[in-house]
Image 1 (cartoon, rainbow, N blue to C red):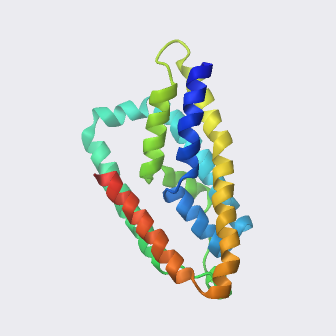
Image 2 (tube, one colour; image 1 turned 90 degrees about the vertical axis):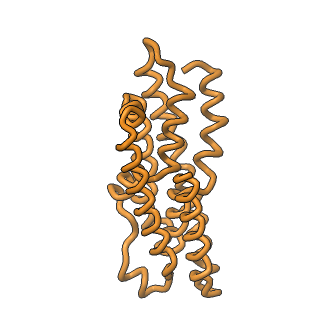
Length: 198
């Protein structure tokens, strides 16, 4: 990966990582409900899971999906159903002590697996590989560097959204505004599904 490609990656990756999407919205909701500390495994699962996804797509999985349209369609359907389920669960967001005691945040493995049904993660991974990885002798090195770049950026993005949710928790407990937050997050997740299916 030469300096020009690296600069292009940074220019595209920073807004992609830090803007709202299913991962960041779920991390914010988890931070608001469970606090920063209990959401760390979720954040690590997102960061590491996405970096691994980028590497796997770079090694050829993306080409498999392009060659098998039915598989791509099946993934879209599964992703849409799961995201709608998440949106529905966000509608009942509660952050009182009883709710957090009886529930648990997403685990590391669940968050890592979620990347495969996350439309924004797919779009980012495919775009990054197409932008950065040169189909030549240095392809494997390019894929490895791309995965490393994602692994380094991911935790910063996750921590930012988890921290935002954690700070929001104080305000929501004082005002009882978690119902409103749940509705807003659910609408944003549904919007991401609509954009994904268009």
